Image (cartoon, rainbow, N blue to C red; front, side, top):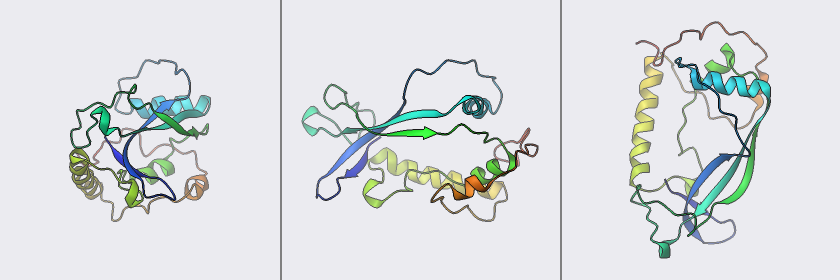
Length: 178
């Protein structure tokens, strides 16, 4: 789904799609089938070593028939290849602890946590905004959270967690009061 990109120092504004892809081959693993299988898989991988992803963008090409409002319209890479802009490295770590899971549970992800020029565009994204906000409010109310965590501005709070205790989240259901 397209977002906008505003090139620094210019008045050029163009829709983009972005992608994150593993930096190299990723070994396939059998998943557990449990409620937390993706989290457990990520934890096992990050216990072994760091994770690495390339962040790339694909520029809008009106002449090639690209559309922003039609989410089913593919943007062929032969008409606009992805351009790698950055490498994301997730350090080796243990993140399945009571402190870290509670911190993450109090956050709410949405693509609109961005500069106005970088916020998503298109009809599907306008719908996603309403859905994300509604689900977040419902989840936090159901879980008894009085307030959302402030959006992180760095790793200070995360790095301050020192406990490796993991008891409270075993068997935890989402949303909590089901």
